[in-house]
Amino acid sequence: MEEPLIERVEVVALLFNVSDIASSLARIEGLPGEDDGEEEADGS
Image (cartoon, rainbow, N blue to C red):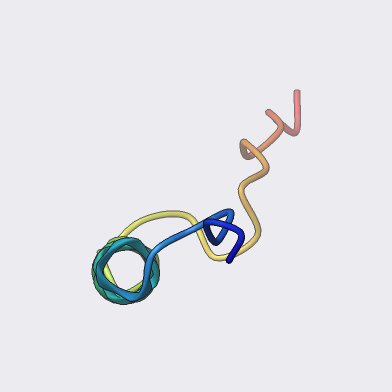
């Protein structure tokens, strides 16, 4: 029988890591800051 390319335990660990990254990104997006990421231009 052939050995699987990736073990179930590895897949579960990867899913948890992706979930952690997604929740971190959601928190970062919620931080106060510029709405559109552009700096305000001087009107002079």
